Each structure stands twice: as structure tokens, then as C-alpha cells.
Image 1 (tube, rainbow, N blue to C red):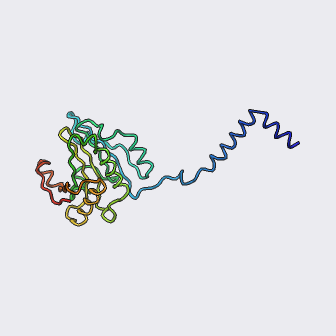
Image 2: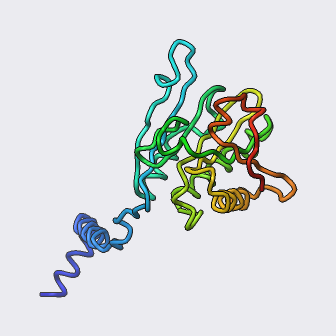
Image 3: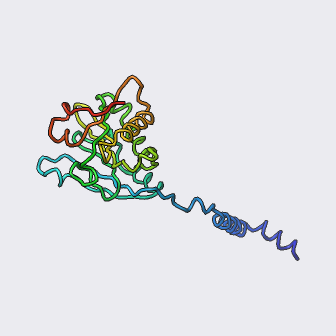
Length: 219
């Protein structure tokens, strides 16, 4: 009798398909639970977009895209939005700790400054996207270790004269921590040792044109 059932299954294509479907369902239920669990970040972050519109003031042009707190949600967001190199001139991306707005006047930012990297026009197509992504990975991965509490966020500015990437810190007077952050950023972006990047205090930037702002630290 058992042999008759085996022969019946082998000779019945529909039954073979059904059995195959059952096997696939069994395999699906055996998915590694690790693959179903999202990996939380130490901090919650928010991505902002600034679109230059002369008919609106600066605040009206700044929009919060979304906030996230897992590795998977970061990648879903990063792969959804346009690369920085494809943004029109005058636009910015900013990624800051959730609850912190990407502006000098925010209470979390106002006593701090930024490590600033200036890129020439050709670097938009060779380095900009890699620099921006690596900076974001430094943020969400807490790459600055014990100095990570000093991190506010990062901004990429798309401009005709040359793009800029800034890493914002909370307190400009913490020289040792600030310099450590600058060195780590330079290392992660693989900036050549011979090229220096500078740190500018927000109060100086607000009172002067960006090109003449005093550089407080260099690495």
C-alpha cells in the first residue's frame, strides 16, 4: 500500500508541485531570527533637506525628511534619497541627532563649531558622495568613541563655486576632544596627510563671510 502511495506521488505532477510548495513553506519558517531583527543605533538621527527658493525665507526652505534609529532604516533612507552629487546648486543635506535642528542658533549647536572640508568642482563627481556617506557612517557608528557626545551632526552644501562638507561639534572650547574628532574624520575620509582641514567656530562664521572665518584648529 505504501509503495502505491509513492508511485501515485511520482506519477502525479500536481502532487509533486504541492509537495514542493510545502517544502518551501517549511524552509521559509526556518529563517534565521537574526535576519528579522533590526539593529538599533546608539542615537536616533534625523535627515534634513534644504532647497534654495528665493521666494521663501531660510526656515521655510528647511524640511525634515525623517528620523531613524536602526541600521536598516538608515540604509533604506540613504538608498531612497538622491545622492548629494545630484542635488541642484544651493541645496543641502543635513543629518543631526534627533531633536537638534541644523542651524547655528539651536541650543545644542550654538556654543560649537564645525570641521570644514572644501571641495573643488571636479570632486563632486569623484569624492563628494563617498565623503558624505563615510561621514554619515561615522555618525551612526559612533566612530569618535568617547568624543561622540560632542557630535551634533553633519551638513553637505552643494554650491556652484565648490561644495562643502561640515562636521558640527557641540563645544568649541574642548580643544583635545575637538582635535581628536578632526583627526578621526580626516582618517576615515582618507584625506592625504599633506592636506589640512580646519575648524571654525559658529560665532565667527555668523559674524564674517565664510571665506574669511578664522580657523581655530587644523589637522
